[in-house]
Structure formats: structure tokens, C-alpha cells
Image (cartoon, rainbow, N blue to C red; front, side, top):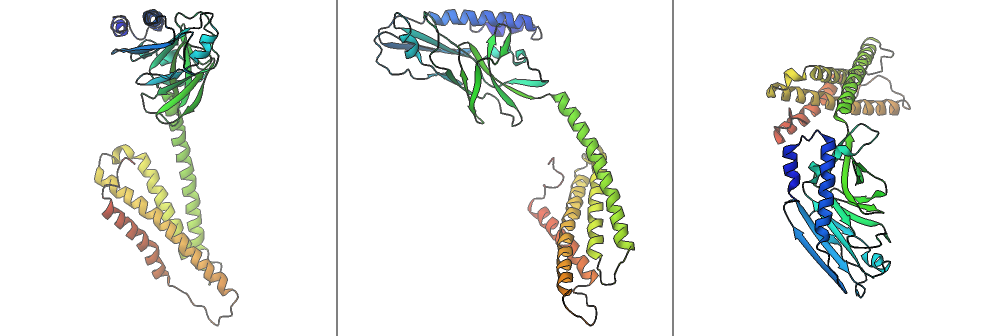
Length: 360
């Protein structure tokens, strides 16, 4: 009844009343520690006991003066485990005995919420593990001989942009004093603490409000940069089209390169401005995606053609030619520049017909 009381408390009190949540959370922890301490019984060598309920899992390990173990095995629950030097603690006690109680609460995060973790940064907090508690019941000298390592399984998906903190409960808030993250992966995190208490793993992510402001700033910056780019693309296109410095200079590749990139960025800009109108129409959305893909691809093809023409031009500088000869006509270059991009887009549509116009 005591272990299941947290759900009844939440039904009675508002979760927004942090003072009441912390008050009843502390009472739950104290009651749990007293209850599990009743499982501790005198032993000459070593003994253990455990239980599993819907709201909490617990395990107790006891060592006596004639213990034959070099170290006790890790105390495990479904979502956590702890390694502690109980043998060393027992040697520091006059009776030569010690006991450790380890509990993992499945619903305690509803009372001891992650928002009790006060940080200077405005971040969103998420509880990434079950709340666990480790104590040394019926042990006279509770001083640790070594830091205690906790392995906590992630109960939620880890955000790559999030920051993990190993915290312990201090009356009314989560704090990090004396605890640190040893190692972590996508599924587990190992915490090291120099004292015993109630622990948890909390992930901090940038606040949603800050993310919205950042997205708005990025959108405005993107708009300004694309417009500036369009202006310079237009100036470059006019320069190559109207200014012919030498009869031997072929500007076809440069003109078409500027034209492809100008149209691609212009269409991209218009699409972003009218996205709310375009997205509901799947066919229109797919067509625009294909056209943008086509123009960017043709830009790469025209870059390649320009590189080939520059190579031929530099090679011919060392040769004496009686008359000007073009390697390829302008019309044939245009066929290559746009046909290659068209083929790639066509193959993409054939292989992945749903690829254009998707959320990505």
C-alpha cells in the first residue's frame, strides 16, 4: 500500500503544486527506506533478499564478520544496477557486518519530477531513468570506501542534442554534487557518486521556445542570403550574356550555369514562402521538388562542362592554329548540360516514385 501511494497522491493533488509533490515525495522515500530495512537480518557470512512490485523493485544484501566473498555481486533491478564495496564498509564497522538496500521506483518521477532540477540555462528536462535509492540500513559506520557506480537503463529515447546529468535528491530539488557521468551510450548510462541517496538520470535539451526563436532567425537569415545570391546570379548572367571580351571565349557553359542556379534558388525561395499552400497538393509538391532537383543537377553538369572547356582552352594556348575551331557546338553543349540532369531525375522518379514531395 505504501509503495503504491504515489499514484493516489497524484489523483488528489495537482502536479503543478511543486511544494506538495516534494513533500509527499520525501515521505514516500522515508517510508520506503524504513520498510525495506525490515528485510535486513543478522548473518554470519552473507545473505540477500529481494522483491518485485508494480511500483517498486528492491534488493537487500547483507554481509557478516565471517564473510567469504571478496566482493558482493551487483544488485540488479529491471532498469538499473549498483556496484558497491560492501565488504570494505563492513570491515570499518566494529561488528564487522553491513547491509545495503537498493530500490528502483517505477512511478516516483511523478512526484520527484525532472523540473526540480534547477539549472542556470533555460532548458527542457526529461527523466531518462527510473528513480533509484541506495541506503545502508542497520549499519553503524556508513562512510563509503569507494565511489558507488550505478548503471541506469534509458527509459526514453536519447536526444543526440541532449546533455545527461547524474543527480541526487536533496530535500526539495535534484542536484549534481558528488555525482558524475562515467560513460554512456544509446541505451545505458553509468553514474559514479561519492555518497548514497536517491538518484536519477536527467536529460537537458534546448528549450522549445528557444528553438522556435532560433528557427525564426535562421529562416530570416536564409531569406536574406538567397535574395543576395539571386542578385549576384543576375549580375553574373548579364555580364556573361552581354559582354564578349574575345571571340574565342565560349560563355555558353557559364551562362547556363548561372541560369540553372538562378532558377533553382528562385524556385526554392518561392517554395519556402508559399509552403503552406503547396504542401497540401501532393502532385504540385512532387513536381516542384523534381524541378528543383533538375536545376541543381544541371548546375553540376554545367560546372563539369566549363571545366572541360577550360582544360581544352589552356591546352590550345601552346598550339598554333590557322583558324578557330569549336570542339562542340553550343547546341550540343546545351543537350549535354540538360539531358544528363533530366536522365538522373527520370531514373529517380522511376526507382523511388514517392521520393519527391515527401516530408524530407
